[in-house]
Length: 553
Image 1 (cartoon, rainbow, N blue to C red):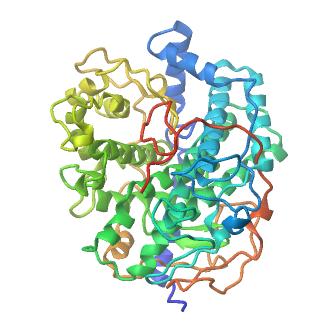
Image 2 (cartoon, rainbow, N blue to C red):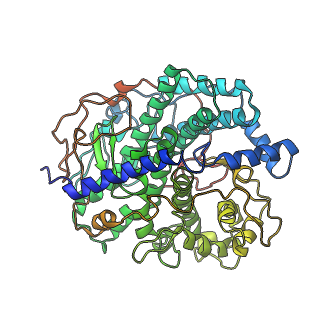
């Protein structure tokens, strides 16, 4: 059954927001002069000075960039064109709890694209810091192999069917995680987001640095980013559209509703999608990730009004005292998961700050807390003022998360808590799921504490979206309007691709929404992948350079 679509008012407001974002960015020339997805020109200029003078710890991070930009690396894309066939015929399996072979599991697919994204980002950063075109050329040749051969895991190729109490997809097996293709297969497909983040940052850096990219190459790069974004978006919809069907009028007291609208997986999906939006200057996609506007996924052939943008997740996942959803429900590891979710939120907030001039660090709505509140709460664990109540974390040090506070020091230069937090380590973290060499690009020269002046705090204090009207968001969360409105792609225009997908008006599921299915196969829109195996574990929760794919649901 196809339910009613967006009300004219909600549709009008959504499109006006997109227009305002575009006008703001154009009028202010992207206010803080972005160079990468997560850093601006002032940060780059400072980093280059640090490299030139060999200032530590920053110079050590520069050497890590060069070391990671291995010019002898051979691309090894995940290639599995028959992944959707039944498992007994060689189709893809979950793999989180299994030993995987080449090109056989989701665990390997997410690991391998993650490593590819991190490698591309390293080449782009090396080109940016050295102006050695060899690194830029390697980035392009490496990307082209992935764009040609890689087979992203797009859940819409498995014919998602969202039905009350019985949502399924092709080849789905019963059980949670220890079966070959469980529902968690769809949920965890969002962790292709790590690769999307790196690929997006690499493209943005090369373009900003003036790399001489041919128009054909530019189109391949952009097309590949959109194909990855569609794959991540499809996993995101496994979360959001399930709730759309189960709770067409949101039941905020339901643990299932809260879980599927508050979980860290949602925020991590937004990290990659927001990175893609920033890299491609796709203001509709940025609005989709931040405010919950509509975005047309031209690979999947649908337009969807996102009910779980970062603002909505902040409202549901952060309590007034800063406690994260993962701590509230007792996830294991309790504080580790909380920091993990905080990292995802911080990553999207930095995109909003750099590219739109939006302050999401202090954003609150109704009775929620803010990202800033969470930073305050969890600094106690870094400073050893509190210990985790989780037996699995007894005696654990949380100083490995101190790098998260580098941006807090830049924005709050006289806050002694943040200053003390970053100085619990040598500030040498290289974070793969994000900016890379953290303190080289983000860090302030603060010594061991005390007041100082931020050297790169050039962010605008306001923008046309700074005081965005949360009426539509609040209606979505409280059930005053349909929680999962989809609209015909013929109604809305989107900058999500230079080419349009043909669509049909029939829905392939019983979702209470209008879904326009693409008449072309996803795998036919680009032929992509080659080779590069990762030895990292998919179940790792580590956030450092040794980390890999997602924790389990």
